[in-house]
Image (cartoon, rainbow, N blue to C red):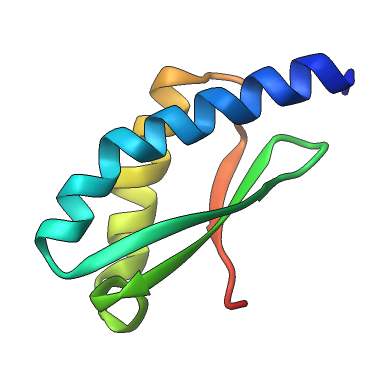
Length: 83
């Protein structure tokens, strides 16, 4: 992926995460952007209550991933990684 396109897509991802963050924080959690891979996979870390919540996978896939893919159709998936 061309660097400028990658940077632009990363900025868009960060913007969407900033829009989602207040909802996660309302439940005692948060989300941290880790990176955007060359094959358009967003890696994030769920922190706080979201890091240990049994429903965090549902939140990640049905909430975060859906919002990001709606805003940026080129994104393939959003994955939580433990740092």
